[in-house]
Length: 176
Image (cartoon, rainbow, N blue to C red; front, top):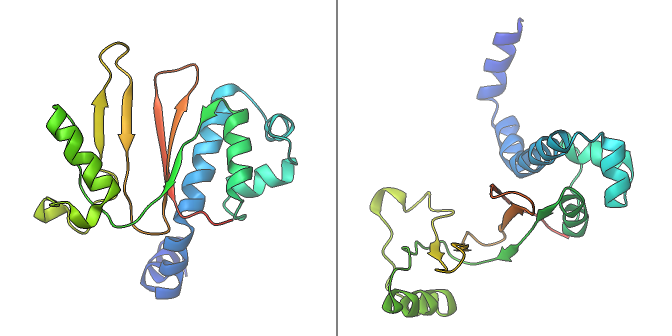
């Protein structure tokens, strides 16, 4: 069996596909940490020192063989200069951009009492809505505000480089 045949066999294997799907958030997190670490020019050892953990922990997180606590993830991202925000949330909904005071009031109702909101999710996005959100701008500094509502047991982590305007987004299931 050559490599291509083996990959085809794995693609048909339901257990493999389920495991791959379950580990996707871990791989996404690991890849995001690798990119940020390399961008800083740090080794795993340097990152571990800055984050207050062991190099072996960084290695296992980066290769998705560990399921770190949220506190560990926060320490690592903080060491990399990445600010994190998380929000465990309920049902997926779509909130359109806030442009008027009326939009703002309606959005607060949807966030505080989703059962009272008139949800308007586009038909083709009903099953896929994971991160369509409120995008507002404060007039003085053009700062963005994001509100994210995802399926239960999912954390949205909006990360922003402290010294950059670039936003990174990590989405996954993390349990302490």
